[in-house]
Image (tube, rainbow, N blue to C red; front, side, top):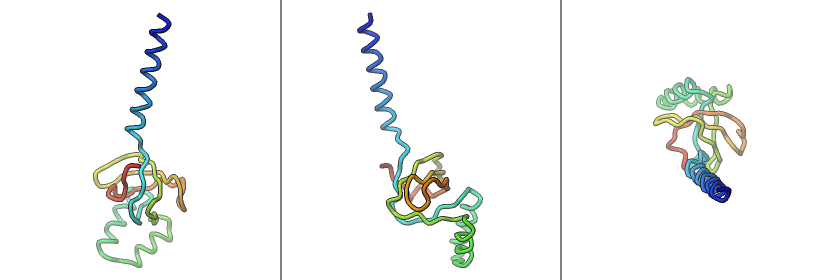
Length: 109
């Protein structure tokens, strides 16, 4: 009976490990892109970019409302979406920042 429970625990532990690996939420930024500090700033950033209003975009960057993420930056997905995803930056200049980004700039590690 003891052997049965040991095997059961090993199988259960292994299946949880494999599941965690498949559902890894770690991503990498594929190309340099803009990210916003929250969804409101993301919507404003999109409006500014659509108008090609570079001075307004620079002001948003200076205020810390918009960040530039370099290609190859490692991030962790907190909340996924079709048009916006919330991430935490794992490394690079913005390490530790929680940002909103277009998911098209991310790929799974």
